[in-house]
Image 1 (cartoon, one colour):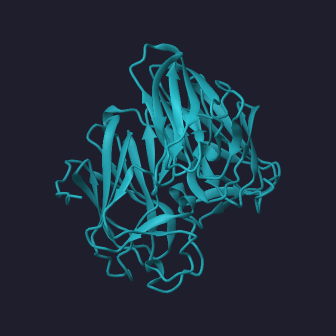
Image 2: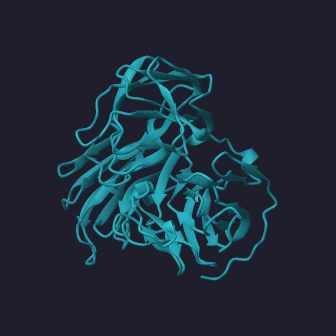
Length: 431
């Protein structure tokens, strides 16, 4: 990879609690979601909630509860809202109500820990005043170790957000990076100054890529209006240079006296709704207080235009051969639908001028045939050497405003793939 020149954007910087935010010159001309922290006066609680500061939550803390019947109610004005929370082996089942009416039961259990992520989205509301209530049930998935429910923040209107892991096929690396995961958690590594990792850190999707090599670069290619680099801060963390679309935008000092895993260490907002690249370059330098120059790439969060619809939405119809509620990876809002049955079809009916199919890529994924309004569009080979949950597998824009149908059909697999799996995780609808 060619070394990127340091050309500074003519833009300001905003220092956040857990990261650095870069705001593009076009940001003021765009309407962005507003984040309300769980401590905002618009959020009210019954008894049974406490504040947690043990993880890098949005704003530094989150409200948590295992008390059956404990409720958190958010009053807002807008057409949609995202509940931001956390899921993991320790999280339970919540009941969600909008304007006092029950709408969903949300099982927040996940095999891996994911923090500051959308847990539930209420779409299609009138652009008026509403309430969203989250109630801890005290119940939990059979695989969960606890019934904890997390209320971290709320976004209004609810943006279309996907978290892409460091293994996503759209992330490329130069030499000098290694992966920290369950396979090497007991071996000597740079995360503990060459001593064995006694316990595995709670990386997003249970893995992250690490480097201390000066000049090592990781580049993520994406389409969206904002991007967050999810990394880590700690006593061994170093200094990284960040480049957006080839231009230098920030030097990020990742040192912290306390370790922060899955921290949002850099955010760029107000981007043009187009293709971009974000490059993280290891400098080999470190804060005088740091013990090392470690830089971590754990994941990336991309906000895209439009409204995000989950795979459980009634606007999606599934033929025979689909398995619902798949939780084996870090999927969008926790679950996905999947099929490895040749001929199995899923059809999404939507109203808009464009659509994105959020699926997955990996060593075990197959080939899908895509139809739009009944007409064949293309065959998509989702095979990749590395895992890519929440990957955008298909995009179609420029449609006539109106109602359309997108059909995804399992048809086969690449010779290199180990299976035929096709995943339906979510859809983004572009108005």
